[in-house]
Amino acid sequence: MERDEALALLGRYVTSPSHIAHSHATAAVMRKVAEHLGEDAGEWEVIGLLHDIDYDIVGGDMERHGVEGYRILIENGVSEEIADIVRRHNHMLFGDYVRLVEVALQAADSVSGLIIACALVKGGTIDEVTPRTVKKKFKEKSFAAGCERERIRMIEPLMDLGTFYRLAIEGLAEVRGDIGLD
Image (cartoon, rainbow, N blue to C red; front, top):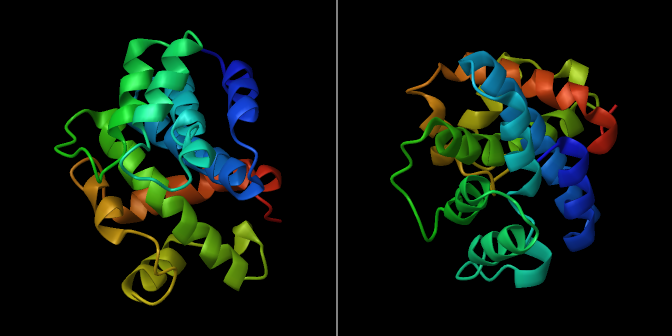
């Protein structure tokens, strides 16, 4: 599936502007991590775009989140591999992530919110955010409290957090208009 097809599919199921922005942010981080690891950046970006395709439908029901996403993707002709990654990304139902793409999705899903919060503190400007900024804010548990730091740390077997933060910031800078940042 190509990016444009994934965006069209996302638009059919997700109406919440914040969820659409989150999907763009996660996708941008996934693309950068894939490039860094020598993986298929286009496929990882599509996974990031589609990972929460069911969120508006399930209304926060974490017993259904991911499972409904899998169904939607299969019904729309998305590959079993991508659909299964989307299904399994719900860490409340699944775990033991060993595939690189699954580990990256866990980390990207959480770090995007932390970095966007850092940018908002800097006046909404992503260019003002550095890995050092993110590292400092990561340690402040009350900052972006909904950001699950243990999921971000899952990336550490693949790269150090400083590198991950740099890649994530670069990715978010590339989609700044799609996520409401300057």
